[in-house]
Length: 237
Image 1 (tube, rainbow, N blue to C red):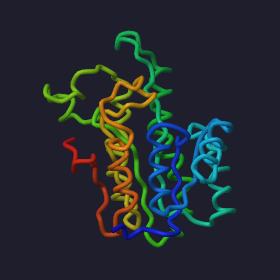
Image 2: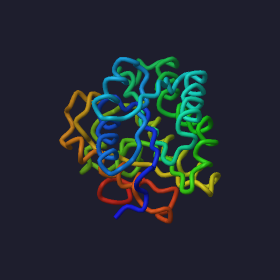
Image 3: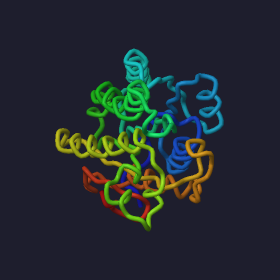
């Protein structure tokens, strides 16, 4: 039985569809008060209304938008128990020799700098929680071990920018875990899940893809920090 129940307040970025939406749906079922974070107001409101959640506009690539989202939650909820940094993009699929600096900046800003941006803005809210937690959605595609294992699907695609960004997300997670001892900070690999990000080509269902996220969001306060897990357990990195 989860130790974090009832009035746990959880904010999920990029949650108007895909993994974020399914995570929100499942956590609401488990008793969380979920705040839907999305860049598109129409899609965000529609998702929130469908789920029975509250919509908080946020563009994770924009400092002012992130600050407004933090101020919104401060005014309405007053604190935050769980922050799920889920928003991300796959970026350019061009061959490696055609990738440019702007291509890299776009992916790293959306997938990596956004976590710094959002975490910085939301730390005061998290520090008002009794047992705060940050969950960063990373990927096995950023694992040196998995991308060099010919038996793993992660070793097949060549996506320099996306994979580099997810390796950075995992390292960022371990560093924040050490720097913020009062907050559980963990990373999750959803696995190859059918979403818009991959043209719904993944073999896993959305439920399977959100199992590890939900586990981290509902575990006890003493479960540990600085971990990288998937739905089967620790991920080789």
